[in-house]
Image (tube, rainbow over all chains, first blue to last red; front, side):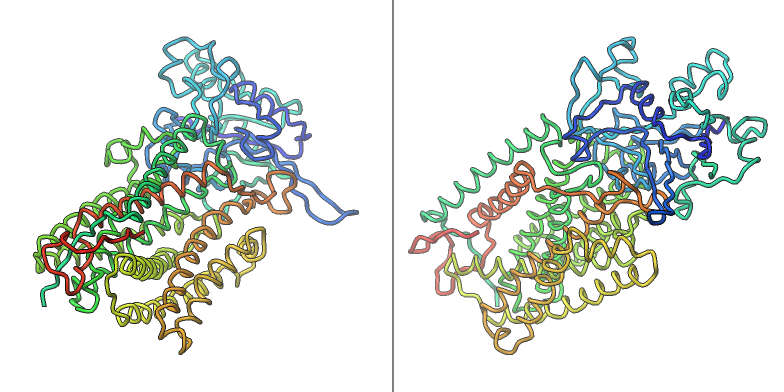
Length: 228
Length: 403
């Protein structure tokens, strides 16, 4: 079984946030109102943070794109009481909305702030995927069957693309990639199988020094950064 | 000496007004729950930064009160201290009601409360590594045990009650330590993460439970014109002094552990950030310092008023302790990356007090109070008034209600 992972080269990242926008577009994530942004209730599957070091003449700002880290030892899966969030065989951590009871324990336990809660029901037209076939619309864990309030949601590594691509026999990582990887104008992102030494991600990792976020927590994220 | 218990008359004007008021709050409970359920939790103060708000604060507070009440009840039923007998039944009854309140709080806090049955599908549809799932075993067993305990007490089966009471006290300790573990085991939140948290929760439960029993006993006995021995309250006060001192030591070492080593940012935020007042004024000031002064000062510790004031202060202070854990614990932004995180992702969260959330909390508190007041009317909770002939309910005068 493959172990999907993503490598983000911070040296190539220009901070355009195309990944953030494309994620919202692909997964139909609601755009919050300014009021929701102020009160921190906007849903983000992928966010970008800016971390500053130093004082004025010698300031250095790092832009870090942060999707869900899809940890190898995800704390959210440990704490979820309803088995609503679980790890697939290929290592992707997914959220099954039909099971989620909305206790928000996973949001407290996530070290990367990757999870968002649905604080309201969305407008039917805009954010409920009417374009999906009816069977998927009502049963499948992705995309939102009907986007309901009161459940937690998060990045899926665009597993609908991966599953579809595998079914069609395409090469994952080159022909089929998650939306944020596809949208990146500077090719800072690479997606692929971390276990396969021939895959582009594994070769990139072998070539440069890399790090993961909050390594001291030993969650072993599968989103790995190449330092600047 | 066999002690007699009686119901209260419940025919006075004050009682009727109180029941009507609290009954009206049940209506508020239903409305405010439906508003949040239909409009979503956007009507509350919770956000993606502070996912747990007032309701979870009340939930752990009530579980603490319940565990404390049951442990105090054991003084009369397990350890057979005769002096505590008049409040024994009340303590067990309060234990049940407060637990019912706590469960109401946690149920309405869920985003999809209709799916909560999944929690109880042990090993099959739920995840037993989650502390919520483990605690659901503790909570259901706890409520069942308390019911049996109270029934045995009503039936007068003292030997059996002592056995069930012992199990129940141990179970209550497990319940509240499990609740502390919900927070104490979360390794990515510095303010939560602490091996001492379950023990701190237990100690805080004992202080707040004892205080609530002092308060309720004095108020109920006064309003129903029963005589309460001052010595009973003073001895509970002395007990309270001891537990508060233990709590102080625990809080001190918990914070010291987090402050000593350089990764102290979150704890410094707790002590000096936006929510410093919850910690310093409520948790330390009202929860520890003020009651200790009142209980140790030779003048106030010998007066009923002084002990009752200390008890009221502890109840509010321990509520502050819960709030100082839940809200600043998640409000502090997580250090995703070394350096100062700019923009919204690095800002500490703000928790606004919103009307619907506050109404919901207050109405659940009133709901518990209503059950208590009705319980006094229909169950033989309080000791019979001295000099009053049995059976109860034939008392000559009307009795005002209690809260």
